[in-house]
Image 1 (spheres, rainbow, N blue to C red):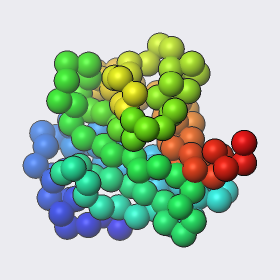
Image 2: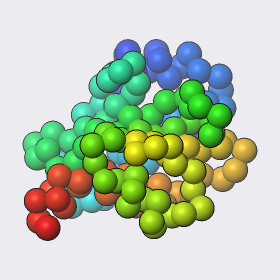
Image 3: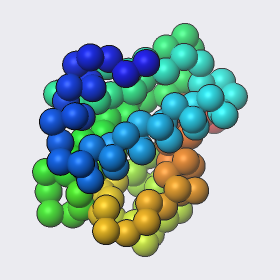
Length: 134
C-alpha cells in the first residue's frame, strides 16, 4: 500500500494539494483493479515523486504524480516523454491542459475530470501491452 516514504512526501504538501494527490493515487489503484491485463501495481518514489508502475506483467509505463511546479495547474500527472500517451490524450481530450510530451496539469479549483482521468490512467497502465498488440 502507501509506502512510508511516499506517505511522508504527500503529507508534506498543503491540505488541498495532499487531497488532490491522494485522489489521483486512489484513481490509479481503482483503475488498475478494473483493467484486465494490468497485473500488480507497485508504488515507489522516482525522481522524488510518488510513482506507480505495473509489475508482472509489465503492461504499462510508469505514472508519477506531484505538486505542479509549473504555472499550468496545481497538481500534475506525468508519464515518460518517450511514449505517445500525451499526444493520444491531447487528441482525445483537447480541453485539458498538457505540458510537452509528458504531463497533464490539473487545477484544484475545478472538478477533477474523473472519466477522462480513468481513461488516461488505463491507457498508461496498458501502454506496453497495447503497443505489442498493434
